[in-house]
Length: 110
Length: 141
Image (cartoon, rainbow over all chains, first blue to last red; front, side, top):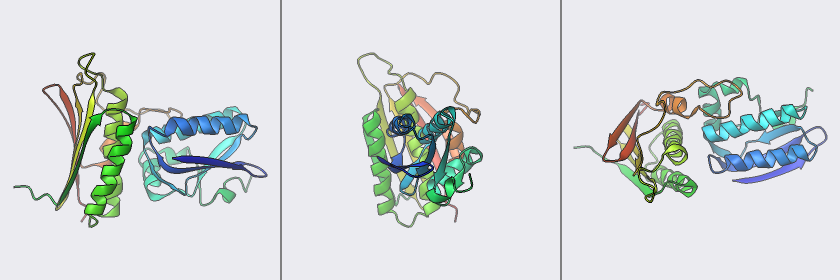
């Protein structure tokens, strides 16, 4: 999995391209923690190229959400693909991790 | 006799590299059996990776000097997907084998429930020091 991020006007967009599994989940946590430490607590995780996520990956997103909120911000997800959507729905975590069609929409109403 | 249309297998040390190898075997299986519907590929692959990850994360070696090995055998049959996901040289599982219901802010504990939601049957076997999850998914046709 490859990570990158871009700081926008009102949020930071983190891209997580590849498989979000027990191999990459700790790396996502670390990456997002560093972005938050860099001063961006409003995070959008762009999952456009995340073709797979398991419960480890889901756990990492929840950990990142908690870290963002503890820093006074929030974490939202965007461009969710079918397998990730399925995992979110089957675990009912789609109630907790708010999903948006695009990164631009995630904080557009705040 | 069972009519196996495609099959893949993996065996190796139960470590993080093994998870990526199982992903690769699953990708190869779907290339060999492109007639399997996308929803069946997606759900079954997720269940197999969850089971393999459970072994890598939790399986304990039965003997100190012999590490746990992960074995995965996946087959495509006309109306059935089946996987045997095994922990070789492992102690019997410690702790509950039933799905948990973690709170919304919990970062773990959803794997077993997810496996049960994704497949048609889940059974567990222990024989000769090997723990095996047998997962089946019946085609949605």
